[in-house]
Amino acid sequence: MRIAVPAENDPSEHRVAATPDTVKRFVALGAEVVIQAGAGLKSGILDADYKAQGATIADTTVDTIRDADIVLQVRRPPADALEGLKPGALLIAVLDPYGHIDALKALAERGASAFAMELMPRITRAQSMDVLSSQANIAGYRAVIDAAAEFGRAMPMMMTAAGTVPAAKVFIMGVGVAGLQAIATARRLGAIVTATDVRPATKEQVESLGAKFIAVENEEFKKAETSGGYAKEMSDDYKKAQAELTATHISKQDIVITTALIPGRPAPRLITAAMVESMRAGSVIIDLAVERGGNCELSKPGETVVSSNGVKIVGNLNVAGRLASTASALYAKNLYTFVETFVDKKTKAFNVPWDDELVKATLLTKDGKLVHPNFPDAA
Image (cartoon, rainbow, N blue to C red; front, top):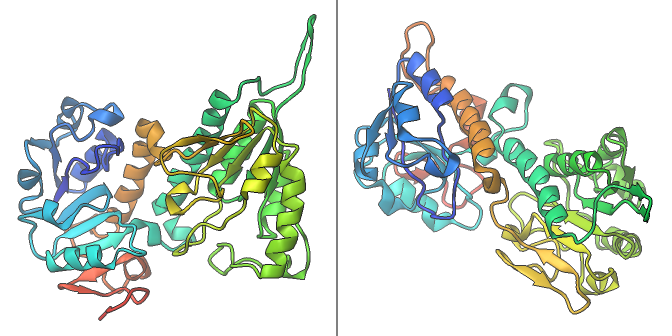
């Protein structure tokens, strides 16, 4: 089994799909591991670190993926970056499939069996493979650190001889993995934290972290979660009631962090321009959903916008990648745990279990075709 880890194609992507630790584990499984020169440098990993664990270093992408059985990447590479890929080789990455059918077809035409790690089902045996959770955890932490850096005042209450500085008020919108980590981090920094989500199960989680839960708790709210643990699309009436409650609450906040996403759809609009106008000058909004259109009406991808009343709306991209070393360590372990299921530990034979539920849930392309039922033209 030959595993290839090319450098990422996006120059703004600092994460890498393997670490020296996972290279060591792959070698122990009997794999040959090839890393493209410099692939880990932005995550603080030298080529020598990989070589010390048994990896081979290749100069180019073509040399790296030549004869590879498995190609590991962080983001979906363009099809032309897979020149020379062996037919039937596995490509495992975050493929961002929604709205990119042409890119998926191009991967299929290259002969790749492409697996989208973000489609990993949220079941017990797949927890260690859940890249959405591992990366959202980092993003939630980093969002609070970014907010603290942008906020012109201290986060905790400070009692000094010169007077008392009140604690910052932080509001987290969307209490998934990123939101929960944001709550915990803001609490550790001494802020007064409130949070909201449409899923009723999150109320207890929020309160267990010492924050206050804010939501319209009607009958629709009690049924607002899918069997997979994701938020459902809410009715217009509920959205209106929740928006009114949110508008009143936001006007009193110093920092707002939004994390709300619905798989396969644009990010729900949670903060209007009018809500931003109601906030105090110097307040900060961190929009973690900006890559999917944003939770805030004024967000712009990759930019920090300052509203007419002095509120900063931060739209950083790839927030998990802003902590590349930690994010890479977690992501690489997610990949290793998934690939490990393809190897018989006794014989060290490589064999993909095509009927396994994890494989079926994540496989997008095979034998030159789209095969995932969620996407058009699937076989």
